[in-house]
Image (cartoon, rainbow, N blue to C red; front, side, top):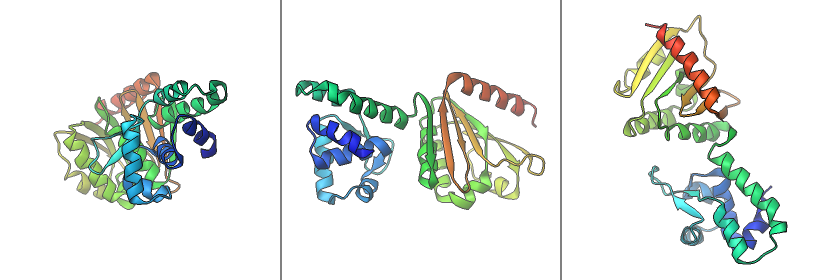
Amino acid sequence: MKTAINPILKSAGLNDKESLVYEEILRKGPINTAFILKRVNIKRGDLYNVLKRLEEQKLIYRVPEFKKLTYSVSDPEIIEAAIKTKERNLGEAKEGISLIYSLYNLNIGKPGVRFAQGIDGIKEIFNETLKAKTEIVGYGDVDGWLTHLEKYAKWYSKERLCRNIKERIILPDTSKAREYLSNYDKKVTDVKFVSHEKFKFSIEMNIFDDKVVYATLREPFIALLIEDKSIAETQRAIFDLSWSGLK
């Protein structure tokens, strides 16, 4: 709960507004200012002043990859250092610091499992794939994207092209899929089709770096990101086996 973290942030020297904004970025970031305004009861002018102070304290930083003004939290060790410098009782702060670290690790997707729900949750997880340092491979659900997330899908494809992130994807052979993929740049996207009658993909799966993403692009809109080298390597090997057997 937010109340478990708020006193710890105050013990590090943050006031009420700074604590609320920092915690929102910690839990939901990277997020833009418009999203923060919707989530936190604070005036726009006050928000920019709070963000400026948090940035000056190096507690947050601007994320350059996004067009809108977007923030993420810095390493929580800065919070811990602030508590130490104020010579507060670290015994009482231990539990809060551990909670902050666990939320920070969950937010950046390591270690282990990150779970998200809803349309925004799907977007949040797939934004992680835009940080891929390796080629993305996987199985797609074009119909799901076009039915529920068409605007985001178009933005995502352009963003991936701009970042020159290559992708190999296996898709059910539907008229929608072929029409949609005809607009993709072949320099960064390689597609193979399988019979949609024999192979019905009800989820999207992406494999990149040491991570695997699973997502249902229909109700109830669930996304799961697993970071584990062995799982990612095994899933990539299975994909490559399937890919090599297709024309």
